[in-house]
Image (cartoon, rainbow, N blue to C red; front, side, top):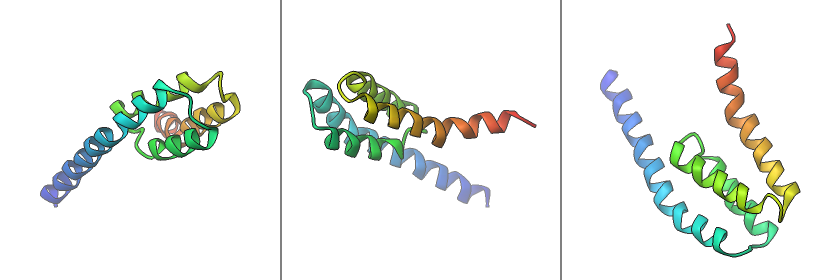
Length: 96
């Protein structure tokens, strides 16, 4: 059983690494120009699924910072979505 858990954890790390490799050029592209709000939403939707990984979280933050004043409503929606999806679990784990 322990070996199987280790294999699953290894696979998750590999998936996150592959996601980072795929999303890095997309984030660089989106941050180098101004995309539509729909394009921004599309990218942030996909990044949100992987922001438990530190490197992908940095990409997510980079995109949010870049577009905060261009599409404030959209960007704030995704900041809140991140908080609801990921930070809430961290806080609830600390409370007995």
